[in-house]
Image 1: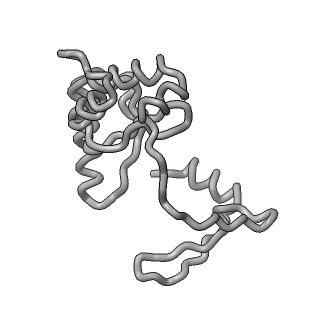
Image 2: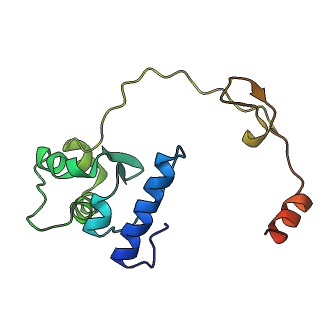
Length: 152
């Protein structure tokens, strides 16, 4: 929640800075609770969730159209993010499903492979950009603490 405690101006400046980070090639994902209209409009993509399910994923510009398609039009001069949150928090999971707020995932995905007993997900191997397998090594807690305490 990088914008928590910031005023609207500072929040928009921070979002613009994070957009520069993303345009440089890094993935940027963060949570924003109750974004101001200007902050919300400055985002590239948003995900709204309710009852543990994705309600909307896409451009902030298309939220009013999405809500209108579900007969929950955003009132004039209302912040679409606030309206989406108000609607999805006041409707039951069954009501949201009935009004098509949850999309049906029709992908045919293979079952996930179970992790071997006692093995951490962090101990699995990774692939580099070239496709070569890179071994992930565990770093001792002592090295981690040393690095944490002796940063520049």
